[in-house]
Length: 139
Image (cartoon, rainbow, N blue to C red; front, side, top):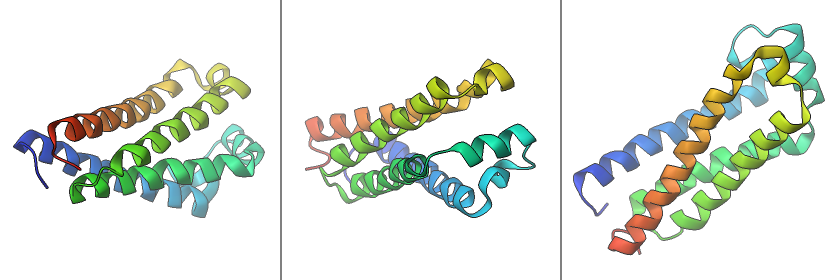
């Protein structure tokens, strides 16, 4: 992996973040609404109403983030399209959730904080990939 120490550190941190995202996705496939701990009746009902494409989108978001992190480590320019797909999938996932459900009204505005962090990390990773391309750290 080329680039300054801070770039290598950021890529390793993003790889760990991505691995946690894939794990969380697999847990949600496996455990459903209980993936984040004891689920309320609202959580179970919401999870039951999720369309099949929503879970597929979640898998795409986390899977392409992990592949993008690995591409950064490998010095591949494929990181850019992979991380672009991941960011778009994250925006679709949470955009749909907040626009079409009553989750904010039921659970409060705080439920948007972690999804905003997820979107921010995805955007920063993509920006980092573009920077790496411009600086010749990936190619």
